Length: 134
Length: 134
DNA sequence: CTTCAAGTACGAAAGTTTTCGTTGACATTA
DNA sequence: TAATGTCAACGAAAACTTTCGTACTTGAAG
Image (tube, rainbow over all chains, first blue to last red; front, side, top):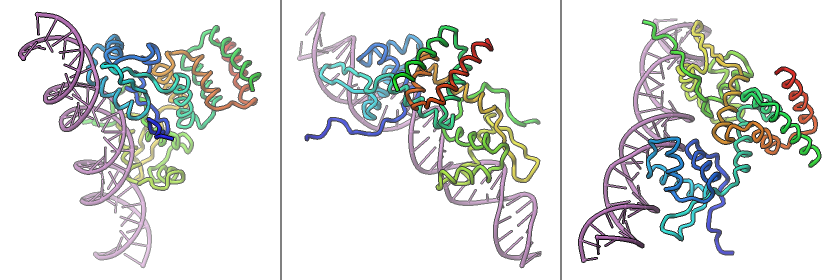
């Protein structure tokens, strides 16, 4: 076996700025730095191009994104699916602030953002599926 | 001149280390630095006393904790209830990683930590109450 | 060939969080 | 009183995150 292209580091929790970039990659799919920079600029007019570039380079080093260098403008792609990262973040928060209790977390989630009746029933359906699926 | 406590700053998101201390304060109630330090040492044998002290001083400046200086060993207390901070953290994560969708967050929470049948039914009850309460 | 635009790479500054050594105040007790 | 132990205060180092200036490369006009 040849060496794997990337080191198999344990998945780290993305920082705030990194998550912002990941959100764009999930939304747009594989993108160049320029594309990500433009997308960020929409909500954050001050953002500098090289700042975004550097962040994305670091993310590539950390293994948060994959980079295709075959074109002059490198193309970046999130390495983990959005749902996977979400699960990781939730699991982390669960440990750090909820003593591992998913129940409490769900309760505060409903309180934090007044869930609509529609959301509530969607959640109910999810519970059904979840119970059946197990 | 009252350089007393601090202004009424908007509640900041506690850092990782700060949250660790808050967890202990919520669990034990108002505590001295030594008590917190001992509690932390149980899970983190290397923790230094002055490190904890400094953190708690900073937390007092930021308004995350209240400090009673009437005794030689100052007594610290979390300023916000645990639930309130949990809500804040959830709300923050909701914005940063879930596009504001509580539904998706709940779904990933159930996935992140295989919820038991018991937990699921507790959550169902919560949904009922929540719906009624609205 | 020269210039210009669009890129990456790199390093360092600036900002934030975490850790810790040292100092001096105050108690306790021998 | 002197020695010892406990504590807050402070500052600075260490570690991590974010921002940005500058240099170098390459492709496309001119």
